[in-house]
Image (tube, rainbow, N blue to C red):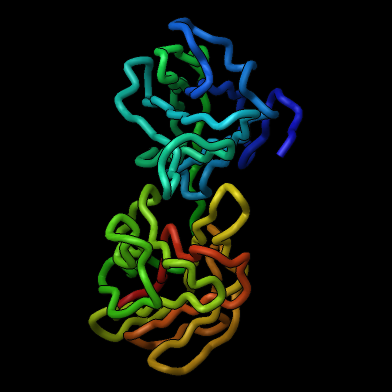
Length: 265
C-alpha cells in the first residue's frame, strides 16, 4: 500500500499524520526517525459518526505501533494495533475510539523495540467531523441480545461485541468467510427503518464483508452493501429477530465491528 505522504483529506477535514513504530530489528537505545520504517503515507480514516478514527499505515519491516491521543497535549487515551495473533507485523490499523464529533484531538504515534529504541512522531492534531444525521431513528441494537452466531474466534472477539456500541471491539468468526451469520433478538417488536453492517477487516485484505443479507422474523428483505453508511429501507418493517448473513466476502475471519439497527419502539 504505497501512498504519497502529505496532507490527507478525510471526511472533508485536512489531516497531516506521522507515525512512530516499534521495530524488532534495532540494537541500541535511541529516539529514531519514523521515516526509517514507513512504506508510504499514513491515512487517517474518520468514522462518519465522528466518534472513532483508524490510523492506516504500512511499514517496510514487521513492527508494533501505538497511538496516544486526547483533546490536548495531556492525551489520556491509547490505541494499539488490533492484531489477532499479537506481535509485530507490517499492516497497521490502530483504532481511536471514544471521540467526540466536531472536536480537535492531539496525538502521537510511537513505540519501542526490544532494545528500547523509541520511534516517535511530533505532536499532531486532527479534527473529527460533525456527526451525520441518518434520519433513520435511534440505534436500537443495544436493546437486544445475540442469540446465535456461526462461530466466535475467541472470547475476545465474542458475537456480543457486534452490538456493544463500541467501535473499539469487534465480533470475529473462526474462519467462516461467506458462511458467517449472526442473529439478534431485540426483545420486542420494533419499527425498523434501516441498519448498518460495519465489517471487520484484516491487514492482509481478508475478513472483509462486502455485501450481506437480512431476514426479519424469518422473512428475507434483501442484499445490502456493508460499511459505515447506513442502509435505509424503502418502507419500515416491524419485527423482533434479525439475522444477518455474510453474502460476498474476502474470506477468512469475517465478522463485524458493529451492527447498527435503526428504528423506534
